[in-house]
Image (cartoon, rainbow, N blue to C red; front, side, top):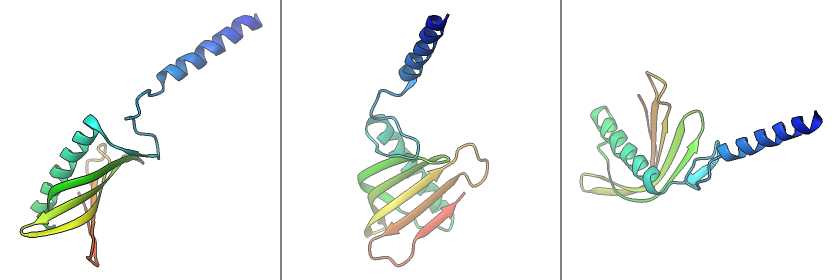
Length: 127
């Protein structure tokens, strides 16, 4: 009987290992991962949509013109961090943009923080 139990436990261990993500593109809980491929495309679409939403309120009207790095982290939602050149009219700045999304929240489910080189303050907006 103990042999049967051992086989069942071994089978469960194998099943749990098979369920683990095998792709390096998968985000690790609380770990920071460089985004590539489709995940990078989705993150860039989120950046553009969030910047457009920011411009409809009291925020600046930034446009991303050169994204050098995108990372993702799963933390009670998803935190994407971008190293990006932003344009506001003729003004161009090198910035770090952080977008934290919690899509299950009806209100205040998106937060954007923008910190640009040479600027004292930081844009911080939630909707």
